[in-house]
Amino acid sequence: MHEISLCRSLLSIIEEQAQSNSFERVNKVFLEVGALASVELDALRFGFAAVMKESIAEGAALEIIEIPGRARCGQCDNEVTLQQRFAACPVCGAVALQLEQGDELRIRELEVE
Amino acid sequence: MCIECGCGSDQVRIDEQAHDCGSRRVSVERDLLAENNRYAEANRRRLLQNNTLALNLLSSPGSGKTTLLTRTLAELKQSLPMAVIEGDQQTANDAERIRATGVQAVQINTGKGCHLDAHMVGHALEKLPGLDNGVLFIENVGNLVCPASFDLGEARKVVILSVTEGEDKPLKYPDMFHAADVMLLNKIDLLPYIDFDVDQCIEYARRINSEIEMLQLSATRGDGLDVWYDWINRQREILLSVSVGANLAEPA
Image (cartoon, rainbow over all chains, first blue to last red; front, side, top):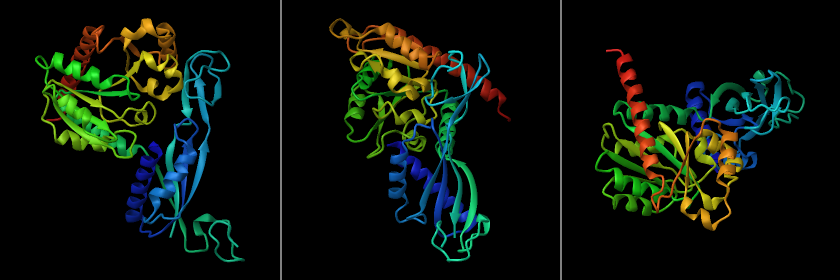
């Protein structure tokens, strides 16, 4: 359940943004989550609702933008889609994939008032 | 009516920047782990200034981490300054076991948390004396999942796997074995009594992490401990050469 501590980081970023961008209420949080970011989405949603209680983001909607795993093979140079982080290249079988995207865990934007 | 927030019935506008209900969008683009990583870098700098080698010990519960640690402390304490940061959800039992060896330990109880983070470790560091040229062991919460994502500022991640856990753990928990610098295969004194294929286990771990170093030992019987102590000393030498370089590079 490290999703709970990720949500706590999320809340502290939100509170910091509330200061610097002067808003008092968060209606929606747009969060990019890579398919290979070791995050359980159900646990993240559950943790989000729990952690945001009694904060400026209480009741805010969580919009998760899923980013698929993409990698380039260092052996055959093909770009491939990855379901699992440490897989071999599905084209040539080499264990030489360089991750290009899919481990994101990033707040993209907030809808606030 | 706006399906986003329920405002107005006939004024829905597509332009989200000027959404017609008093709300606006704020672009953030911030990484959720960035805060932890910032604390981790501060810990790393502080440890490097004292030439302290920090090892983050990771495993499932019951792998023999604390047994390995207490024996290591007992056998090295004459030759090496050492301290321990002990992470558990509850109880100070492990810190008490550590203190019984005469080595200083700080217990962190994470409560519901399933891992240590760099902020907690930073506060624990404040309670420990400077270990000049010594070793700090950070015993993480027993868990092969979450601690893999949290940098604590350590120099090396050490994953401990006991032979009673099954040889496919590296495939089941790949993040952890990918993040680790060395894998200690513990409880090898039990190999005659159980069905565990050492070569297969090593092959699985290398499939996830081709660079991972591999040591086999028994913390209770003592097999392989000299190799483990050599490994620790080698990491200290590497750290020392890095820290001398870093201190030279630092502006006056």
